[in-house]
Image 1 (tube, helix red, strand yellow):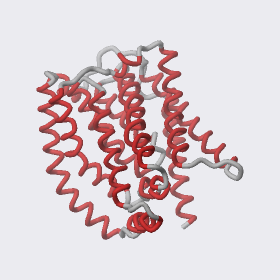
Image 2 (image 1 turned 30 degrees about the horizontal axis):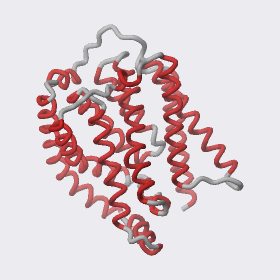
Image 3 (image 1 turned 180 degrees about the vertical axis):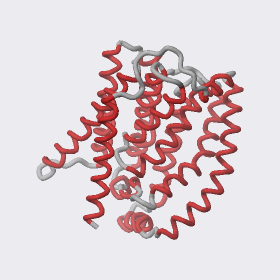
Length: 311
């Protein structure tokens, strides 16, 4: 697996996503999917092209992804790292909401209409595991074979962002994508990024269900609270989280350094910033990737335009 093959996998995933959306629109009068089916299908759309790509490349997925053991003490520090980066993620999310709607909030009614345990497993555990396996296991490691660690980090974060197919989630997904790659280099294991992703998604699901009281009135209250946010409210939130994230992200950097030292990988973490490229296989940026990026941005732009016209 190298960067060129990763780009073909991503293009196949994008085309499969668009095809699925078109089919669902055409079949909507006679067939509709609930939130659970939608989440399962969306994960399969990403998983299937990646699985085929790994099979054709004849790679060992376990070795490629980097499922290595990490110390128990590192696990606890990874969880601490996760909570320390949350203010930064919230800040980026709030900034994006100045221009587009909060995607998760807009889906809150559908999410809360499903059983908690089902949504917790799909959104909080299985989804993050699947996305980390693909984005940090296949995409990141594939790009590392074709370019520098820095290039691989940025490219895998970009693909992780674009996979969400909307500007709101793409914004903070890119930030998360960069941060978890640094964590992978500090720990030497994809388990660290899986833990981060599961903690972030799980707490989002937990908070959403804790905010509603299980009644229709509770659902309406959550949705109304989200829709009533004004630009002034968002600017206030951004101001607060700008200060908070400056503090917590600095602390997260200290935790990251501690983790690297604990796992004896300080040099690996420093190597992320090196720009020298040894002889590698394939290219990082290719025509299939360019086509995929154009399609995704066109799709996301069209979605924003349609939402504006419907308001």
